[in-house]
Image (tube, rainbow, N blue to C red; front, side, top):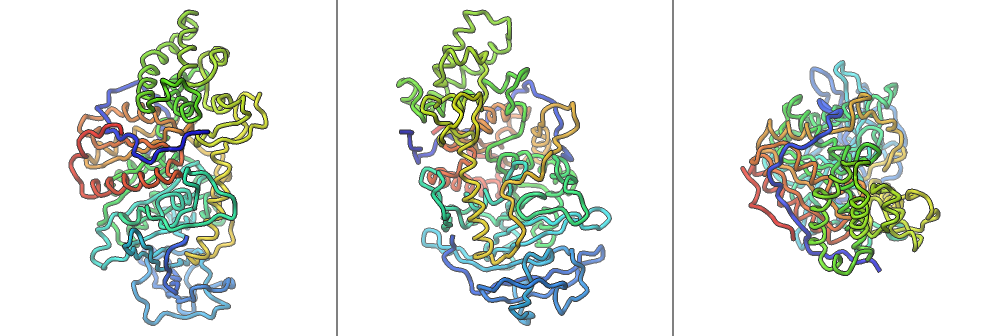
Length: 592
């Protein structure tokens, strides 16, 4: 049987000084449930028009807690019959003593692009009540000529505070990756006040899927805004605007930056400590955004939370002529083999000691051997193959047939081939039946396919029942409509946003970065992230602003219950430290 993941913390590392390394210089992408109680009312804010000269006032609507499905209407409200269809949202007023009340049969539909669903909630965490407000709806995005070009869907959670205290509370903008992933993965996975109920080890349960209060919500430490980029979730380009306008590195960054600037302006949060949190390709977006926001919009960040990093696509793309990734994937192969008992007893005895040993060998011996190419002697070739077999759980013969270069797809297919099982790319702890064991690479990813339905189904239940937001448009948890994605002009090499991160950190020496990686992730291997962070080319003082933390989880490293708790603690400490603008993080944190 596979090992269960211990709940104790794994390792935390403060990055040492980075030395300049060999970096690709590709397109940089710059300038690239269930809450315990819900108050029995919903405020739906009918939003006024966004004009160069100001914002038109809007009416607030009080609806019952369980309204019937509202009928479509063609105007915002009796009070504002001529307001344009596409308007910029206003923050809902704290009180609406004389709010207009619409008949239930003709209530203002929250799916209207100018409507927001505002609900007050209470959540009990460790005996303490957390009162907060959810705001759900669209933010119209306009171009330089004032034309609405997109409607970006968002869910914001703000803790109830006095009017004077709110602006100083930290505010974190969260998004997922893909490209094409909506933000419900982070929202219902670890950060929001409600989460999808998974097994203790982080596997998907049988349907129907349930929601549960999230005692580890980041809302206890920061207000949260979950953003779906255009083409994901409910977000879409405006009528008449081609969606491909937004489907690329630079265009995506500009549209999300426009959203952030509008949000902090309309909700008066310029004085708040600001954070970005991204997962997977969301880390790509976050690094490019950090650079763009500070240089273009004058928005300085206190911190960036990067989960399962994709900053240098060269180290994620093993291929003919690109040998660097193979040694960087090896420690992840070792972790997977350790979990499935494919290593020798000596290597299985101590997880971290084994990984340290493999990391050293990968850079000191394996990488130079690959660099020799055809000049590598037969004796040395056989020696490297034997060591690779020892550290990966694969056969020496298979490794030799692979020319010492085993990609993640081939490894996922080969490790448990005799059991006719395939391991997950997103989480190597999870396995599934292998219908084609003789194929070269894994036919599917059991660690991704089994989670799509739980997160989509749970979100559709949650957004209607708890957030009282109604939209008949399909919610795209994973969207193919964003492809082909524009990664940059042809011929510029692999996407590389570490230049953006470096520039943002140089421009703002107080900017803190939290890097979280999962040992059982074959999509963004943890050692590849370590390599990338160690090659940023920063001074020792700036490099000390980066904290790396490692988890016994996969790409969605927060799925196991113990890892979700660990992540919540790490994020809470990070927000406190970065929000206070501490000049330096804690002293060196060792592996645990």
